[in-house]
Image (tube, rainbow, N blue to C red):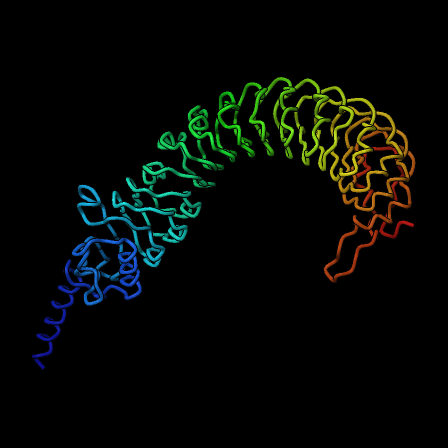
Length: 463
């Protein structure tokens, strides 16, 4: 019985050595991870003798060069193939970043500096949730930095870890919380065609070089940041741009009078821009969406807005515009809500057969609601609340078979609600059992409030 303590002591000492030794691991390198590295070696096109320790006959954690593992788990945590002088002298001649590296789920450090890499950055790198350092400097990579990189929450600041010496065709880093100012390494880029830095918590002014250095830009999106100062638009150097989105920032000053001529989407809403709407915007004959809402613009709507032939969305809401809606303005969605526009209901809109959304609420319009509003056969939303319209609700509104929302509240409307409005089936709501609330609850009791109309009471069909 006296031998047992000696055996226990021996076993305890062995376990202490096993757990604390820097050279002995409890687990060998998982075969999936060693195979991933061997596949990466193949696509690197290395010279004979380079990375010769990488083979199927040995454990990648104990004998392979430039690899480090967690000695408790055996998982690969570091791959460092940085060339000490230049990639040709080190025998790393060329190759691509293999997606096989994405099979190293516990990788923390991936350093592939100056080894002649070409091709794209695999988007699956965004799945390496433990990655802390990613260095790809001094290679010949092309394409875009994948948006999936933003998923790497443990990765250091992108402007330090992803400062490529190669030229990007596109950079899409949306909701990455970059912070600070625009990354300075972007100054070295002059081939960008697409740049999206939306919702990244970036501050300061837009550097002039950001657009001037990249004349091939067709998409520029820096929305949802904290940019301030005047809005700089180098219209000549970026003539191919089709999408320009600087919405939801803190820009001040006036709206620029000249813009890239091929713009299709122009969004400068939710800033603090002042002054008149420049007539130069009317030169954008390809424009499909114009959003100037939620600024401090004043003056009148340019009459040349009627010249837009492709416009689908025209949003000028929540400004300080006065006057009337110009004759001939027509789009699928027209929003001039919360301005100081006045006059009668804009009759020229009646001829806009593509109009689906009309919001003229919170203005100073007056007069009667014309019976011809029933000719707007495509209309789905009609917001006319908080104006000074008077008279009765025209029965012709029942012709708007697509109508889903009607708001006439806070006007001087009188009379009764037309019974025929109950036939507007687009306003009906489905019940959980699949049946339709077919006018069982009068939908007009709310939207006609603060008027002189006589509403129906209780629950029951409108006949």
